[in-house]
Length: 160
Image 1 (cartoon, rainbow, N blue to C red):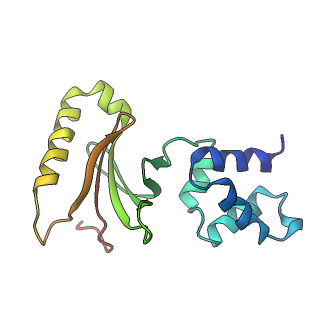
Image 2: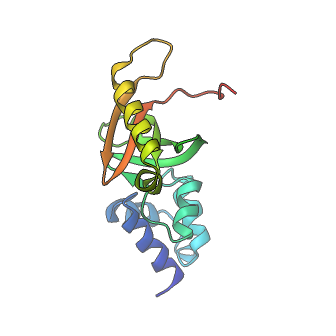
Image 3: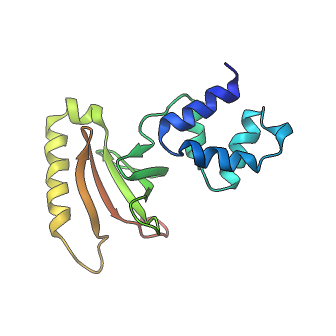
């Protein structure tokens, strides 16, 4: 199997693109460049089909965790005491809304009962709180044993 075939299989396995989306995008890549993994990744990035973060993960062989239910993880935004917050795309709507997706790592959920309880409490409280000066919680749930909070994404600088 060639490196290109391996990469394309990883793209499909990740769930970030389906076969039709991938084929359609690759048709616009010159034929003499279709045998180069680097050319393919750059073309997918330039056509807004994948982010650099996603291609980096795929090139590392990571295909799991780039899609969480209806959310496509685009890029990390920050790290906190309990997990990581990612910029993600909610694919359920035509407009594909951006959200800030806070994820408790599965390993932490399995081994740190106190942190899991704290995250679950945050999930419940975030659903109840509504204030014009706070990011709105879109969804707080568990998907395949991964606990997450999807919040309104507010672009700008961090409060730090």
